Image (cartoon, helix red, strand yellow):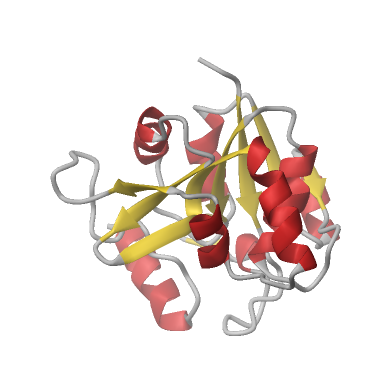
Length: 194
């Protein structure tokens, strides 16, 4: 197996949530601990993408955005530049139900694509996806063109859709629940406390 870097995106701004989500306590531990747990068992290295100095104490390399205020694309760009491996798996800090079986499944099915994204129902999950470091020139071009939407990156990279549905034994309908609102936070708490 090639070496693999896990990248956790901690955007920090979180306008709708009102504070940095990764550091919010969810069912007794910081939200970032959930994706960390999933990545630790399958990755050789882990990078945290954040402009918030409070992440410096977690014990992993923290990379600030080279290009500020362009959303997740900026974090992906800086973290991939810093990564020492071709293969990278990116997870958002606000997805507490992503697990190592899902991430392994993405890795096993990425084939030779530059980007392979989890796809559930009608929704692509660009922040639960595989990224090859060779996608960097495409990202650089998009930044120059001021095209910051991840959907455009996926299209330009001719990404592979990895269908995630109930046929998979690790599937749960809250697998991709990401926490943007208080009600989503409360739902996640309930599920985790069960």
